[in-house]
Length: 178
Image (cartoon, rainbow, N blue to C red; front, side):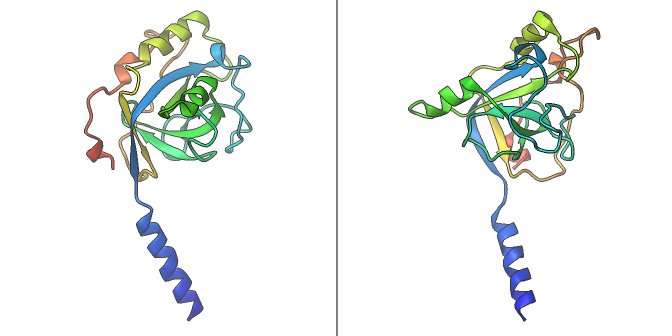
């Protein structure tokens, strides 16, 4: 009898915890050359040994940084602008300043590039080219696992093109994702 009650309550809590959206999100990018310190180190170990990475799938989400308290450590979100799942694995100083502002500004900083190769100034320019207008994006919290994914790396030093600005999605209907 107790087992069936626990199962019923567990099912109810899963039903109640559907996806939600966060609007007016500031969306920036970072990588090896402008991480602090330079390199792939992250603030939180979410299964990668304190290293940034990921392809953007549900099972291999791409690293993002934000303010402590804005997201739960290791929380997975979905980003329709990139068509990638992202995981909160790192700290972002500007995100923290924005989160403490009045009113609060939601801000995510998404990892680009390699964990072993410093793309230098070209990578930083790519990050700037990928960045949309401030407070212009919407993200999905508690996303379903089957949303569309573009696994294309955003920056690959030496590739042509190295910066994959053709793999951002400015036009989307958030109701298609949540």
